[in-house]
Length: 411
Ligand code: SF4
Image 1 (cartoon, rainbow, N blue to C red):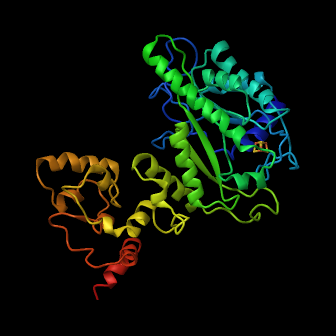
Image 2 (cartoon, helix red, strand yellow):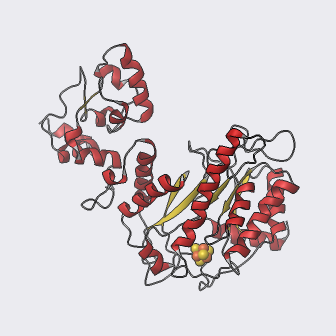
Image 3 (spheres, helix red, strand yellow):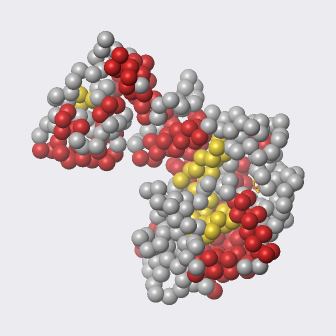
């Protein structure tokens, strides 16, 4: 590899590290004995983190870090005095193929700063994917960033070659976007999302009735929200994520704690950092939305606009809603059981299977994979020591996060 390409790679891979929206799941682009690469599950799935947390390698790079915009939170903003570089389409294609052949990577995540205008930039991203698929018969995973404001035609073409597309909304509130990225238009960011959702649905339904319908973004679309650059609450963020999941069938919303990269009066100070725990709690709340039937208004409200940092969102909800408990292990329906802190969906399944053959007692339930030190305060069943009694939410919380408090209370 030439010195110049190496230098570009170091600049543009470094600039791409702020984008966390490149995990994927659900792609099924099988190699039928021709071509290169394989994104078929179990045979070299090509993304950074799978749904089950497995890490696979991906060339994650920007096409360029030149940008005509000046978003305050972005390291590539035009007013930043940084080293700039740009790859040609052919250079990225060659890098991907060379890295793939050497087993360094299993796929490509390609984003870009905006040079000239959104369509001009997107045309180049699409061309990379097109060349990989058509000239090199590359079947590895491709995730393209859909640049906000691109035309429907380019969005369509991108969907034909990429496994996943993501339009990053970045700033969760409209007011925040106006303040930090005044050149950006929220409607122009939402448009490609809506278009993608309609096309993904259309292609899926055609695939059910017709043969030889091409794949269209088989791993769906995702977005990234930056947390902590503006004044948004967790409620703003989780409500928006819920809206996206419902409205645009997004596969994932990624939450990225703002990393101060530049001095700007509109932003948190350079030394400050969004606590990792905030990002973590948002992911937990997101999980409850997607798999546990919680609504955003249950987890967060006017009175409670931010997630507790000292307890996870499910425990926080349970402590604010003690009137729902205790739930009867042997009678409660699936969704209610899943709301018990310390009982996850796999355990709910096990409990429901087992109780068909007779009532379960606490000793049996404890062996099914529950976190007994939490669940004991929220369930009822035979053999359960009277653990909750008249304890209030504060006392239960204290006992759960500080088991020593439970010991002390005995004396
Ligand atoms: S448009 Fe994208 S790359 Fe350009 S400054 Fe804004 S966030 Fe950064």
